[in-house]
Image 1 (cartoon, rainbow, N blue to C red):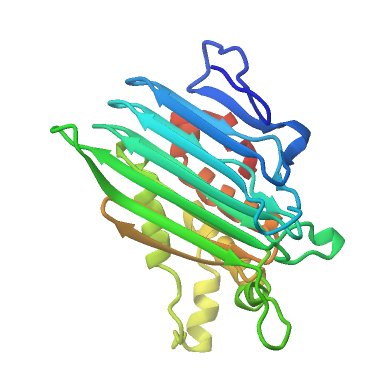
Image 2 (cartoon, one colour; image 1 turned 30 degrees about the vertical axis):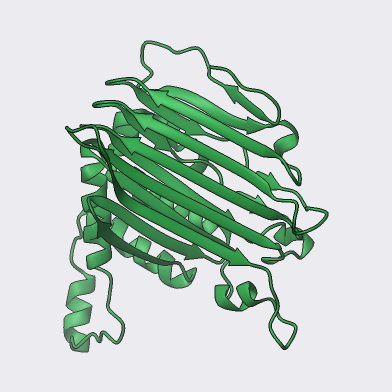
Length: 297
């Protein structure tokens, strides 16, 4: 494992109870300054398990001009029956920042991937709210077939432009409509199939727009006295959280990948919601260990 400025990698000494190799992905000073370029290549050996986390938001500092672009590229190859869990803290673009990110995952037979990519509105405590100049994020998932040819399964692009409209309002601010965090969770492979199915079923069970409760008051009162299972109680609490905190999310299947998109009015509410969903299902902790979840607790 080798690295150089501005990237820093730390991997604690493994222990016998550790379910995966844990690596902290860090930057000197806690962020990337304008013009920094990070290129990281990871090769996960057959049957190996890798968890990648961070120790805080990846801060993207202001660029002097829009032509000075901060870039980060990650290329990961998952050999046969290997697995990767990448659940970092959000990227935090500061006012005036220009950032491009590309993450490419090539998965061979039996490989599994859990990838979280999320971006916040900036330093909201200082009044920033999507005041970036530009933010671009691309995630690609490729599958290597028996003929050793790579086939594209998923290409997910997020483009945030800090341009203003004729009224002088930043377009991205208007489009976010109060959201301070926006993210994507991508799942692929046999080890995360159970989690993918859980998220799809939970999304399918969401109340639809315009849905009405046609029960009589008497029936509602009887139902309220029923003893609920632990799973039903958890679901009711989660749905109430989504309603109270205006958490939006969707889930879809794309060529064998499960893609979850979500947004929330605060980073903490998104962290609690997503972490709660992942912990409730249990696969990630079981396969990769509790430490893989430290950024979504």
